[in-house]
Image 1: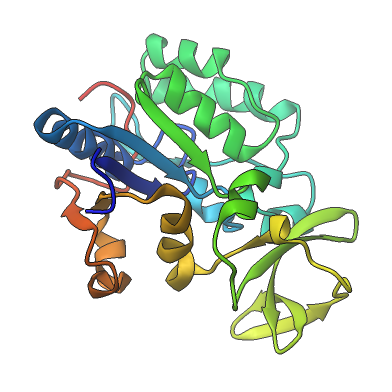
Image 2 (image 1 turned 180 degrees about the horizontal axis):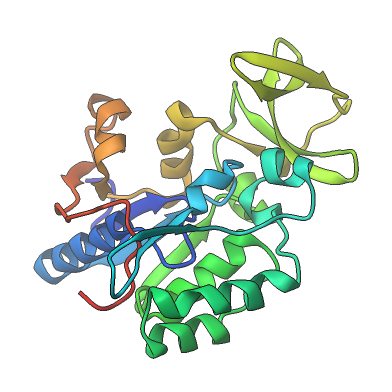
Length: 259
């Protein structure tokens, strides 16, 4: 192992203001492993992702079991589609509007936590919710948006960059020397490319993410989700022990602290 002290890590994008149950399962798997081997736990919070669908919060009506899907709203279309989650600002009316919908789905205790949660953007609000729910006690959080993290991390030959575009910060892909945004359906359009892109602006795509993360965190054990297990090249990291997260029912549904 690369460290005498175990470093247990799991990673996840912001995944709903009540977190998806698969994140809860990752946390529980990490805590159980820590009881066995000691060490510390690090949550790599990949809040550089731009996909607004990541934060869809799936809840069941307490009486009818009807499924509801709630999500943040954004101030404009560019922000919604292209800004990273840590730059997707939350309009002022959103919280009150969501509070009116929650009694169908969650208890008063969960509503009170939601009332207390704060954050001006989707990533900050989600993280504050997870903390106020007590899910991250004793767990260190490192964020992919953090400029210091990006500066310390390894160089990226292929990358996305957080750059200004039409008054917003967007996550654009560097492709053949130009930045581009994905329009959908396999179509892209280029945007102005700054002459200098700082390391603090760069973050990786899916396939490079683990190596980039590992260059800073140096985990000895990694809790892998179902999707990650399909694309992670585990053989490239012989010093890391990969542990599959525990199975959990309705993994895409929100965890509301009442299982």
